[in-house]
Length: 469
Image (cartoon, rainbow, N blue to C red; front, top):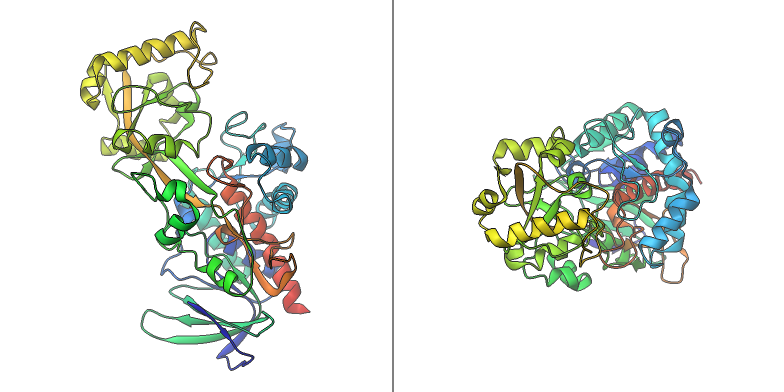
């Protein structure tokens, strides 16, 4: 990949707005640009669009939506902004945080009303991991596949031209950074040069680029059991294009981790049951963290344990919370859920010391009764202790998605180091700097898709305006 500095405009054809990457951000940008009257070409490297959106659970956090109001939920952009800054300890970019806080609600409303994206509120994580109110909007099946499919259908209905198997490997720009077009390579060796008046980069993050991870996220890149669970195409191409064109980057050490990835199945374990009283132990049968303090940072907590492994231990009451969710059903069908009538039998089944597991369960029962303080600061008194038949799922931690990227303004235009915008380059999704601040512990659940659809919508609208100027 490269930037070709030339004023030449010898292109095979021209399109006002070109968008690179057909994930949630790119599709939302395409919808917004079409709504603004622009002709749009959406280029996707893969033969079939999937990426991080399809691999997610399809949730986006948003504040002040009509869906929230209909549910009687009191939320607004100021509360969301305060939660972002509190969670990130003030390290989130204030402009991006303010933009997402202000525009996420209108974006969800627009997607629902204008493009029939079936967002609803089907879980509540209020009070967990930084959200003070319930603002997680998901689709009925609670899968990223449904959300991605809905966005693709909406784009088709809106007249977006989506071309797959089209890898953008070069950008044409003049000495002042004005983008004039892109070069597309096909798997069969074919090449096309496409001119444009505005270019939107939504090629996701850099989690699959091990060199970039080691350079920018040493805390994870140096973990003894490094694991990446994300789309293999997340190689940071959009970020690297933007930097070469003169764009600034921010919060490159930020990422979304997850400490409950079923091992060796590569399927997430629904965290709702941990939030409601389940625990995680290591291969020694001991708890090692406050499981509910930081859903993202729990990845490193697990990876730092012997063999980089944890076991989520739960009972029938906690199992019922997730029994109907697609991930749990799949894990149960694969035999990933180990079950036993007693703690000793479960310990033998998962090969942890009987005495240690029994002691851990006894201690957490005393914590639930208020007789003992958790050494890691978790409050167990809100839920009954584990009892009866017990179950366990083997887990590990993984990097799911990087959160740093190109700095953008309130219209999603890529910014230079001096804060001025590049003439006609925009970014969204994992290509743009998110609202997660620095490190792993600033990630708010569903912030990735919230940033993707919000900046995507703004990028599409801005690109259409630039193309019409």
